[in-house]
Image (tube, rainbow, N blue to C red; front, side, top):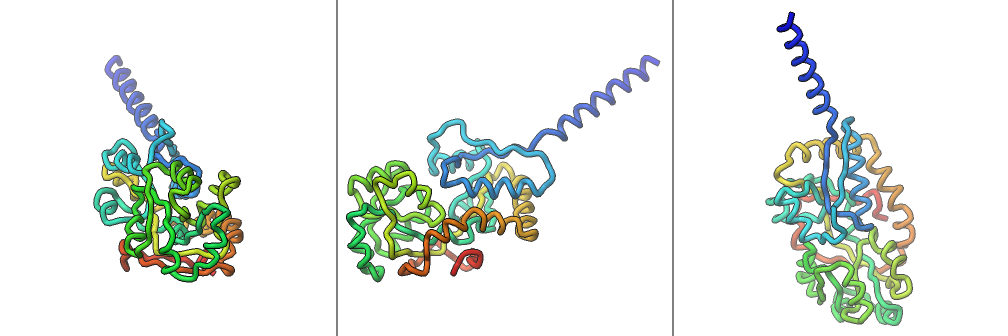
Length: 278
């Protein structure tokens, strides 16, 4: 009898332990909590919601994690995921999920400028005209080679917030921003800047989720969730709902389009722009 009770207690302990383990949520740690990253986190949440398991998306403990530092934390296994424009180096050091999150929209650029420069920017009709001006750029942003490849002058900073201060002080002439980023930034800096009203430029610029090599099972789960969201239309519905106003405000038809070449872009990085391209 005593042996029977002991076995029963042990079995119950195993069952309780197994149930607790099964109920543990999937934890996903990231560093991208600034407002400009909101959509990517929403896509991550959508993908994980398709799996039917409990999960938790955990942001950074500190408010000041830039892209360079955050990426190193993903690579060394401290954090789990980031979403950034793809590069060969990123694809070698992390696990890429090759489903473009912004459908190429981040590669369509509008320009933040000081109001007094707007008349000069109205006269830009070509890339040669654009080369007369200097842009602002993050020193660690992976698309920096795009501007070198197109002979466009840039001034850089390692801190995103500093770039707005530098533009205000005239350290450079324009700050090129993705269509999905610029309107929120304008709201926060409306007393200092405007959006140049007749120009935009575009370069292929796919943004992927990158998962640390220490979590291959997480990469598989996120890709599975994304493909379910693509198939059932919920990914597109989220994209349209989130960017509809932005696309409307940008009034693409009224702007001159300048195409930039992207030396980082290869044919194995397909981008479907049909959700937003006029």
